[in-house]
Length: 336
Image (cartoon, helix red, strand yellow):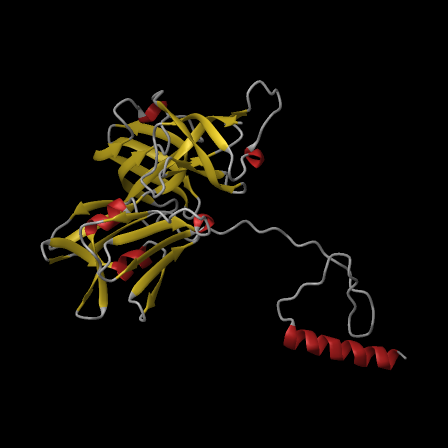
């Protein structure tokens, strides 16, 4: 009998290897080894997602095409951590980085930039229409206008020498401390990909806003920093900032009202997307966001912000340059 069980289990195991490579046993289903002995179950260990990209500053060669400054798409996107796929049938390109998708087509002035969470939304996928379309240089390399980088991707572009430009996408970091001496101001920041980084604020750097003093920013605040082109190999690495800014204004009290209908809700990411009379806006929602519903005393959370719900509220006036623009929701009122 034991031999029969062995043969049966061996057959099932082989079949599983052939037909069910990625199949998992249902919860509560006992698992046996080849001798028919039960295999102890172990709980899966949750792994923190690794960060493969967090801002970069690099140069790219530009060429003029019909009076428009253009750059090679694949080279730029891969430097920014995107995977690039070419569809020869319709001459379209799709660039993907985590949940972000950028798609375009040769000869078409529409540039799509959206989050995968909104791909199945019935409303139109947001896009920017520019005055110059992508084209094939020497029938082999896709080039796009420089303003596609600033308008669609929301990155900074600076003119360089010898027909080059410097492209900078800000890294999101957490401030550890600020120090000043005769040589200037230095920030110690925690970068999720690079660890601690020492950042010197040069006289030419754009630092926050006119109303902000770097030394007044408390530790633990999230900053957007455009690193300089050079970063030392020391521990911790050191660099000079091109610019330093707060994703959401903490030095001023500038707020803005909003009103719309929720079209997407990503509870895990703490983001909702609303339709404000045809314009999409993403809102960050966290435990500090006050969510209410009339005179109801119940404590509401992002879980209650379902697709189709009409809401009004107050958001931080500062917003990202992404499509759709993203801001922080300070208060949210659920409308009946």
